[in-house]
Image 1 (cartoon, rainbow, N blue to C red):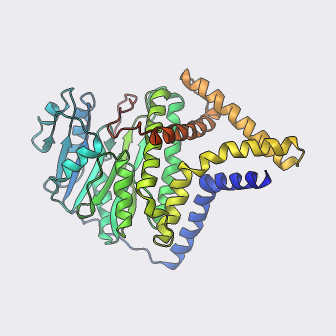
Image 2 (image 1 turned 90 degrees about the vertical axis):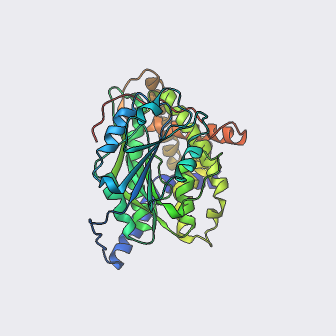
Image 3 (image 1 turned 180 degrees about the vertical axis):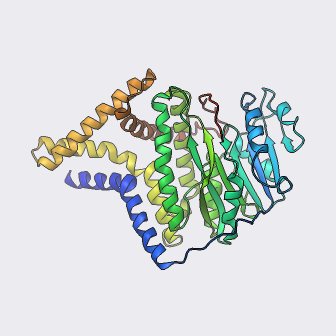
Length: 392
C-alpha cells in the first residue's frame, strides 16, 4: 500500500508540476550554452490560410471580416473556407467575397476529410489552419511565418485564448487551464518542440503535410506530431493567437472533453512509435511526460492515491499520510461543490480549479470507454460556445 501511495503521488506530482519545473531547468541550462538567434521581420513567404467551418452562419461574417483584416500582404495570403456539410447557408456567405476561395460539398465527412480535400488546392510553401469560431490578432500570420526562417522548424503552434463572456460559470475555468498549458508549451518549445498543436491556430510546411486517415478525431494533434516524426520541430508563437469564448455551459464543455479524451487514446495508438525513447529520445520524453501520462497513468493514480492514503491513515501509519488524505478529502469536497455550482452557473473561484481538474479526469475515463467501444466518430457534434463580441 505504501508503494502504491508513493508511486501514484509521484506520477501526479511529476505530470502536473514536476515536469514543468524540470523542463524549466533544462531550458535555463540550454540558454546558457547557446547563442540567441535574431529573426528577420522582413520574411514574408506566400501562405495559405484554411478555415474549416460547419454551420457557422451566425459567426462567419465576423470571422471573414477578421480574416480579411489580417496584417499580411494580400498577394501573399491565399484564403480557403471549406464548409462541407453545412446546411445553414454558410457557403453562400463565403461566396460573396471574391478574395476567398469557397469549397463546399453537401455531404459532411468531418473536419479531417475537409482539411485533406482543401490541402489538394494549396500551392504555397506554408499553410495555416484555424477554426471558424475563433478570431486572430492582426499580426498572427506575420508572427507565425517568422519561425520558418529556421530550417529545422516544420510547423508552428499559435496561442489559444479563451475569452470570458458574460457569466461564464465554471466552464470559464477552461481559460485558466489554457494559461497553464501555454506556460508548458512555451517551455516545451524552448527545450525542443511543442508536443501537439491545438487546432484553433497552427501551421505546417505544405511539403510535410500527409493526408490524415478519415477516422482521426484529433487531426491537429496527429498532423503536428507526424511532422515531429519526420525530424522537424514545432515552434511556438505566443504572439499569434486565436480567441474564442468558453463552452456554453458545463454540459457542452463535458461533451467536448470526452471527444478530446477519446481522440487522445486513439492518438496514442496511432503514434505508438513515439513511445520508443531509443528512437526519439527527446521527443518521446516530452510526449510521454506532457501528453501520454495526462491521458493514462495520471487519471489512474487519482483513485489509487486516495484509497492508499485512506488505508494508511486508518492503519495509523503517520501524520504525513493523514495530511495527504485530509487534503484530498477537502479537494474533492470543493470539486463536488464546484460541480453543483457549475450546474447553476454560479461563480465561486475557490471551487473552480478543483472542479475542473476532477471534471477533466472523469472525462478521460468516459473518453477511454467511448474509444474502446468505437463510439466516437470523426464526424462529431460540435460543442456550442458562448456568444460574445471579441476584438482581435
